[in-house]
Structure formats: C-alpha cells, structure tokens
Length: 562
Image (cartoon, rainbow, N blue to C red; front, side, top):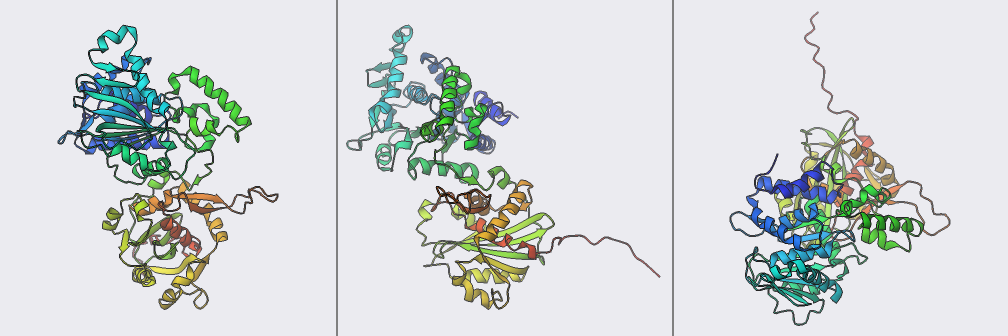
C-alpha cells in the first residue's frame, strides 16, 4: 500500500529492497522496514516540491542519472520533516558505502542543494570535514566542476559564486567549504550542515566535537557521515555502527539518525558477484567499475593477506572480521511470541554475570516437547562503569519490568536469590546452572534456599564442554523457531550481541584443528552485554531434567457407567 505522506520516488527504492529487486544488506532491509513504520505511525511528510528541485540540481553534475539510493537517502535526510514543528525528521545521516559508489559526488550534490534557494535558509553553510585536504576539498571541487561546465556556467552564475576552494549560494549567502582536521580556529563556525568524509579515519571524537559545536546557530542543523569501512577499531565509526545496529535490530529509538549501512552480510558472500551491490548500491549502473572490481576480486583470491583493502573498502567487511553470529536477527525476532501460563510447570534456572558490579541475569527455562519457553530477568548495578557505553533503552526496559537497576555498590547475592525463591512459589525449579567460576559468590545464598552442588546435587557448575554440547541444540531451536520468549527486548538484544567462537583451536600451531566445537563470546566487550543470553545457555545445559511433554491435554473419554 502506497504511503500518502511519503514520496513515490523514495518508496520506489523501498519496494525494490522489499521485493529483493535490489540486493541489499540486512541493515538496509531493516532500515526500509523502520522508515515505513515511521511514515505509517508518525506525523511526518516529504516536501515533494523541494525534492523535485533538488533532483533537478543533479542534472548540472556529470551524472548520467541519480541512483535510486541517492534519492532515498537525500529525500529522507534533507526533505522529510515533522509536520507540526517543520524540523527535519532525520537530521543525522550515517552512510557507509563501498569504494566507488559515488560518495564524493553525493556529498557535492547534497551540498549544492542545501546552499541553493530551494533550502531557503540564510547563511546555511556546508562544511565538508576530513582528515586531509584532498578528502575535504574533493566534494567542493566536484561542485566547482559542475558549475564550470560551459553549457551551464552562464545560467548558474545567477545562483552561485565560486572560487577553486569555495562555493557560495548567492540567494542565501550560504557557503560550501572544505575543512581539514585541525581543531584550532573552528569555534566561529556557523554550519547548517557538517559533512564528515571518511569517518573511519577518525580515532577519537576531538575533531568531531569541535566541528559540530557551531550547529544549532542556524535552523535545521544537520550532520552527514559518509565513509567506507576502515582498519581503525573502537573509534567513532565502530560506535556509529553499533548505534545503527541498536536502532535497526535492538529497538533503540533512532533519535533522528538515518543509518544507511551498505555491506556484505558475511565474508562468504563475496564469492557471488551478485551480492556485491549489497556493499555498493551504485554497482548495477556502473559496468566499468564492475569490471575493475572483478579484477580486484581475482587478485584478492590469490593473495587475500596482502590485498585486504578489497574486502575492507569494496565490500565493507573488516579484513580481520571472523565473528559468527549466534543467528540472524530475523530469527531472533521470531522469539517474540506470547508466553502461555506456565504456573506449576517444571523448569531449570540459569544464572550468569561477569561481575556483580555490572549486570546479572537469571533465566527460567521451560520445555514442552520441542518448544522452549524462557522467562528472563536482569539486574544492572548503577555503579557500572560501562553504563555510558551501553546504547540501549535501559529506562524503558526497567519500566517494562525486564530490568531492575540497583542503586548500590553491587548487586547483592540476596537480590538474585530472592527472585529465584519467589519464582519457586509459581514454578517447580528442578535445578540451577551457573558458571563454574561464578559459583563461589552465590554458593551460600543458594544453599539457603535448597540448591547446592554437593549436598543436594541440584546445582550444575557449567564448563565450556557443557556449552559446546548445548550449542547445537540452541542452533536447532533457532533454525526451527522453537524458542518463545514473549516480548523481551533485553534477551533479544543480548542474543544479538553474542558471537560463536571455535573452541579447542591453536592458531599457528601444528596441532591446530577445526573440530567444529563452539562456545559463546561477546561481539564487543563493554557496551554489548551477553549475560541474559548466557543465563539461557546455562539453563539449557540441564534441560534434560525437564519432562519432555508438560502440556499434553487429558483426552475427554466421556462418562463410563457400570
């Protein structure tokens, strides 16, 4: 169904993604779904006349045509507004594209649009920021080259004034400038749009903060982050990609951010060239570039260790990336099905935490034949040093009763044990499983409510071999949609933060062998917690203690008389 408050030119791209006419990354698919939901539930609109004018400006650039993704991105970032406030719906754009997609040309077109009279905001300066002069000035030079085409120069002089290093929109006195990463002297900037070119090269936020302090002095402040993937880890780009993942897959409010992330979904996809447009959505329209990338691919297959830029820059997969997700987020979302009344059922209990000054999780695990039901709760210590790094709606999760924030120096063992003891009044907890190295902190408190490894033999100390054994069962449960968790975004978030790690490997050693065993680890050590999922894993290491069938109805055989 067509959205009346959207624009058909934007929706055409969305439909192409949804019908897989365009091959796109899982991030782009999720973004399209998110954008459609926003148009259906929010009071927003596309200024169609403004978008038409902006598209018209593109004819002065040496483009054969605008690519569908460019209209989608600029239409949402620069032409979509809240109806009441008339302010931009998505003022912040994070755009990751494979090398050759036309990043600089897109920046140049967007800049020319926003300093034009069609934006109609006086002194709406566009500052293109980069680590070096070439990257900062390249989009500016692209605009100048477009303006200096002989057939257009006379006409365009009515709307723009330019030198080799800057372009001014004459109607609004708005200036396009390239700026390098030298924070000194930037305090006087009054930007309307700040563009960061190749954000992957930034190691910290020092320059980003300086360049953006001038935002807000003009109406409709915007930020655009354009980049390929890079080799710097734990920098601003990784943070932005993590935030994008939380928006697209973990139900974090977008807060005005439009994450357009083009990449392969896995390194293995590189061997089918039809997948390459996932990283470079311009590729189907650029046959010469396609031929060049084919050549690079063949060279990379021979020497992948020397030609890492191919997989990193062309396909936006970090060359060292070996993470194996537990499963796709699409499968994780299918766990969001209503839990039945489990009162009186038999279950197991899993407990997991790294430190009691951080996050602790408890999982109650039920089974009825193949279907697994899980009730999961977590406690977060308010003193945790990781809280500023966690990009998740913690307050919302607390309101839903899925997370309890403890304002104390630690999460005391009694808090966890009291929860389990309360659960024992409703469910039959057969046994508890906890990591071998965590048991000592809870041993005394658990013993008081009847759980002990030696005395009662109803407490399992989980070791890596136990996790390896149950990992295949967990795989099967996801593959067959056997998990039912109710609406538990905390558990979904933690599961999506978890990767599978080969166990028993000795990289570089003679006895190294991939024997197909896996344990679980964190995708990112501090801001992406896995404790809720690992509590589920622990509870499943002892699920053979649960009756196979618990919900079999007694057949009605009627009344028998003798």
